[in-house]
Image (cartoon, rainbow, N blue to C red; front, side, top):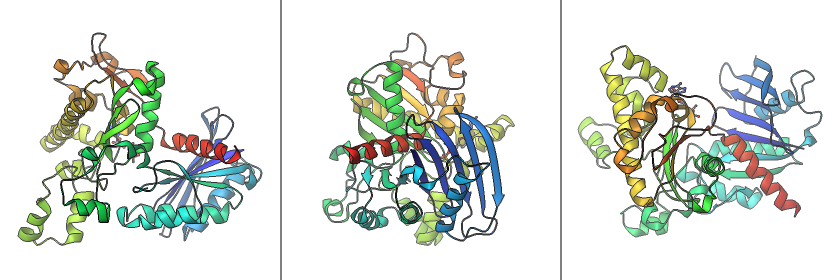
Length: 404
Ligand code: ADP
């Protein structure tokens, strides 16, 4: 029995295949540039977590349906495949970005669920339509498999009203559901579970600040295993400085941009989501490049790094205050896992809060690790995230419920 995890974007589908017995990864890949010139399939297989083969091919992939059929073909391929028959795939787990207020947990997909996700499209117009497309084609290509939706927003459903409501006329929440939802929930919940295991403290007794720093970036305050606040909002634009997103700004800025610079709604949307953040400040959204540029004496890159880490530090302070007691801070995702400098700067000067990084430990690499000093009251951990594995775990749990 196998579980296929799918992350369907507007022009790409990422996939990973897991063995349902032990959740070991068997294959992963990406179909990119769907419907565009140069579409391609990149596929890898694994045995005992070690990569065993790689396969890349450019081929015309006009739509998501063909993309998923290509994925099935390669999974069945005599040389690069890992299954003999499509019926071995018993469940497909789908990443769905926005579950709105309707979905608090992983959900088995039926027509009603599809309709409800469709009704949430206005909340995530960029993400939910391609996620839905992935669900629809997976139902066609794998008709015998249980289809499961895992929502990025679900982990944040425990956030109380005082933290999720904006100070806007309340009818905007009641009528239009305008509120903070939060994203990256799969990652925050995965690393929180890992932290609980690593520290050997039950989730119900553990207070954490989890810091996910990928291209998108967000933080969560987790009290006794439940999320009580998070930095992304109604959309993923709010909060930390990101690769290309501004994060928090004065909400009056868009009016100023429109009035004084004549920018249109679309221009402003593009500016805040695609041209801001690290890219806006120094020209690149890639943190490795920012650090390289800074090392070569680029002042803008130096400033971008400073602003990026200062924002994280401010949120650490805010979430520490919200939590009251803090057991550990967890860094994760591309930058969180790989940049000792970002971790050091984000935690620097927080000794009075009991947060002390150990310089040497901070430079150790790979796996789950503790990077605080022995005297630090708060643990600081680096925990590699694995959103696909978490989706597979959730999918397996949902599948087991259907068999109870
Ligand atoms: P995504 O949100 O696309 O999944 P990732 O979690 O892969 O993103 O994170 C991408 C970010 O991680 C990029 O900014 C990249 O520069 C950064 N990154 C990866 N490796 C390193 C490293 N060794 N040092 C600093 N940043 C890194």
